[in-house]
Length: 325
Image: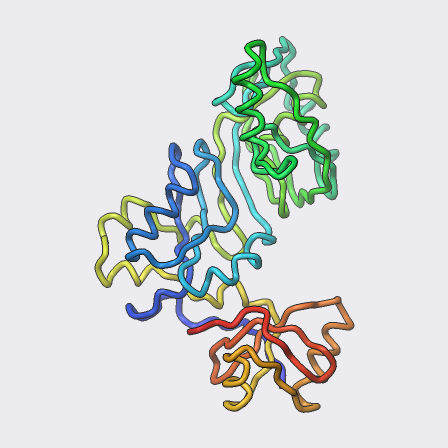
């Protein structure tokens, strides 16, 4: 038997269950790491992790996994994201936002028609070079750490890191408003896209220079800013039971992954990390799905509760991540 987890349980979990997601509306001015530390403290030191870093100058959706949900972070990292951002024309900076020093200037200002004509070249599968100040790894170190070291040792400006271009997916790039000096956009994109680089490259394509002045993430996969909780509200509810009412089900990020229903004996074996032999009825549907789209992971479920993320090998499933719920 195979099913799809399309009907999640209610978002509000019992106060005793800290396995799930906090959808935080991160404010401007703090790092993602600091936001995660705040949530960890609010939930008494439970294991936490976040999906998709937001720069200190950016605000919006920061999904934070609690407890066993940390085992599902990779399924959020690859999710589609959406943003609104503003830029100003006329200057590039070290960081491609307002934090860095100006590195290049231009007196040219594009018209609305110019901007609209340039946007199609930035949609679909495109190549993008990440910002020097980004979390991309360079010889085992984060690019921002390398760039900061270079800046300290070079009084005349940042040493270029020569980061490699990589493929990213931009599903939608829309102009929301503009004037002579600035413009505002809405972007829907895939994993690994840097909005700061998008603004920089758009400026160059238009024969000018540009950097981001405001950035807000509106969604990450199924997590939306409309249902996000602010740090202020989280601080008000404090360490009490009401804080748990803001935990979103762990199944939210697993809704689209096919699931195979187990019996009690199979579920017990899987929870102990053992390989489980499936019946023909159980194995055939997921084997077919794997042939269709090269799917690697499935959810093993018992009594409507996820037991583990698993892989299929012939008639057997093996646990990738056991979920101790």
